Image 1: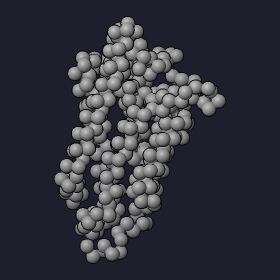
Image 2 (image 1 turned 120 degrees about the horizontal axis):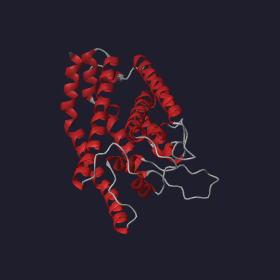
Image 3 (image 1 turned 180 degrees about the vertical axis):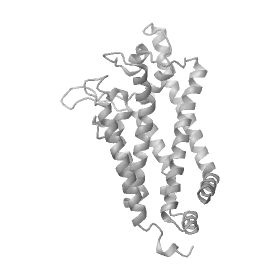
Image 4 (image 1 turned 90 degrees about the horizontal axis):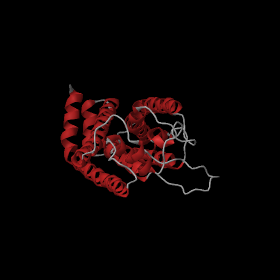
Length: 284
C-alpha cells in the first residue's frame, strides 16, 4: 500500500512537468506529420501515386528509418533524423527520476520507506508508466492526424506511398503483421531496452552518464546496421527481408532481450549494493 501511495505522490509532483512535455510531443509529432501530408499531396498532384496511404504509412514516415549504406558503396548516407528525435525525446522524458534522485523529496522518500531498493523499484515502475504515456501520446497524435486528413486506418500499408516517402521500395511484399511489428511493436521494444540500459548505467556513472550512453546507442544505430545495436530492430528499412544490407530481426530480438535482462539484473544488484543516499543527507 505504501508503494501505491508513493506512486500517487509522484504523479502529483510531476504531473505538470510530465503533462507539459507530453503536450509538446503531441504538437511536435502533429507538425511533423504535416511533412508526410505535403509529400503525399505533391505526389498525388503529379500523378505519381493515387492514394493517401494508411495509418501505417504515417508510422513508417517516422519509424521506417533509412537503408544502411556500406562504407565501400559510393552513395549519399542518409540518417533517420525523425526516428532519432522520437527516441531522444522519449529517453529524456523517462530519465526524469534518475536525474532528480538527489532532490530533497527523493531522500525523504527513501528514509520513510526504509528501503533504498524499494524506492528504486517504485521509480522503475513509474519510469515505465511514463514510457507508456509517451508511446500513447505519439500514437494519439498520429491517429488524430489521420482522422483530420482522412487517412484510412487499414491493417496494411500502401507500398506505392511507402516507396514515394522513403525513396525505396521493398523487393518482396510483406505480410501485414511484418509491418505492424516493425512499425509498432519493434520501436516500443527498442525504447524499453534503451530505458533499461539508461537506468542500469546511471547507477554507476550517474544520471548524465546513463542518458548519454542511451543517446550513444541511438546515434550508433542510426549510422550502422548491426543486431547488437538495439535501435536497428526499430527500423523496418534495416530488416534483411526489405534490404540487402539489413539485419535478421529474430537475432536482433534475442539480443535485445539479452541486453534488457542483463541490464535489469545489473541494475538490481547495483541498487542493493550501492549507497545512493549521501552521508550528509542521512538526517533529512
